[in-house]
Image (cartoon, rainbow, N blue to C red; front, top):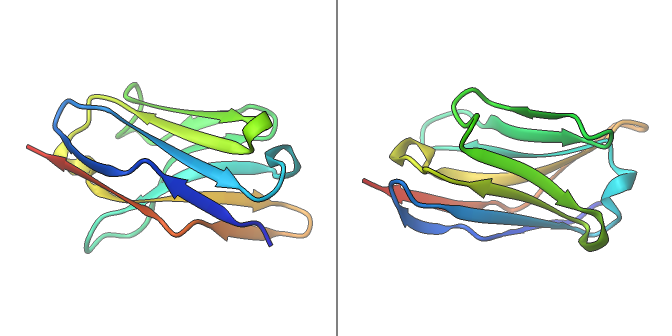
Length: 117
């Protein structure tokens, strides 16, 4: 069982920046992918950014060019640097980790990001 603990959420004005952190309880190179999802009130959870163990990165169209996902293997941490934040980025952000064999899907508890206009 992989434990994921997020931090870094908060209240920020539109145009501002935040950095989210997610610390994993085991070495992240043992996981096949890690990512960030978000869920706004009344909406489905959606993928924000994902990075594979091979270094492939994908972003949702809504955050491309504004958000950056990165990892620090020494700290077993994945980051989401968010810039040029918009009110529509307001959501609970969840860290996710995937192990392919056997398949396991792990989630953090979530961290609230609120962007005021």
